Image (cartoon, rainbow, N blue to C red; front, side, top):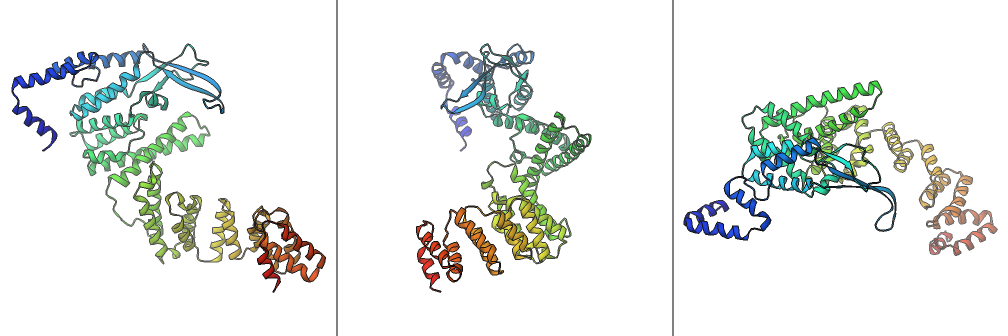
Length: 490
């Protein structure tokens, strides 16, 4: 039996006297400062005991709107922080002399309870007005500087911190109340209004998928998708016009913010609200599959906890299908190169745990030396020079491989050994000796192989140098003398 059913059953068992006695008991237990609220709740003047009355809320909003009440801006320069670390920055906070924020907190908590009581019109009206409020700011008496803005919005991070209430929860209550109030509106009208609500700063953290649990229909989501696609196209046009004029003003950045949010909402509809139908859109299996990958990756970019999203498995599965396919190698090189570039530029999607399968896919996209060298160029441009150098060496551009090694002789032995081996195999003894000597001078890593090369060379050509090298090897810490002794027995 549900909780409310149990309450109703119990009330039926109780006489009027028993009910009155229970109410009086609760009245006696109520705190002194809440007694008037209890009486108003009992008389029906208000439904939520801890919530201000509608008249009090109206007065609060009016005083905020007229600037009669405000927040005080305080800032002080701090050379050091509380721990004594050098800071050299200004610390900003807001005083609340009229207790605006505690009252707001009570309103939001009360609205959440009103949603539970299905008082949707009251909640929608209250929150619609409150979310449009701008809190005026005045410089505090002890502030060392004046504020740059005249007002601050509730969605500002500093206000959210002082408010001590989850504004995402309040925004969700606003959306919920609208959904239940507008069941008779057309899908088009509901969609347009919902998008406007979700694009406000107060709702910036909400995901459109919350509408699914509120009975959002396929038609509603399709309407929202269409409206967003039109809005995005219009914003893109405005952005291009501003760029063409060469004037990146404030409006440009506002458009960029709107585009980001609109794209986030659109991708959320496609990923979580509409049934994802696997329909082949392109002639190419590779292009079609990679578009799916890009869509999932874009959606994941808006998620806070990527590791917990099952869509990561979708990316891995698509890439596995591509690797196993023989079709993709017959696609035009420009398409394969585009996918290859995307993979490299996103560091093989390592943030999704997809680096292994992406590396396999990158290899599968190349079919000849020319394409592998183009792959190497992409890697080099994107600062993955070591991998690029290996590909250059494997596919006919040894000159680029050697140039890389020569320019990256640091403190580790790997590049010294590779370069010595190359020069030695190509009968460039002088260059091999030069690199080996540089290694003895600069390398802080294992010097064993470098010593072995020089010792084998000098043993037959320069006995004096051989003895000096052998003595030096014994004195060095990063040398395996057992390995050297074995090499000398050849």
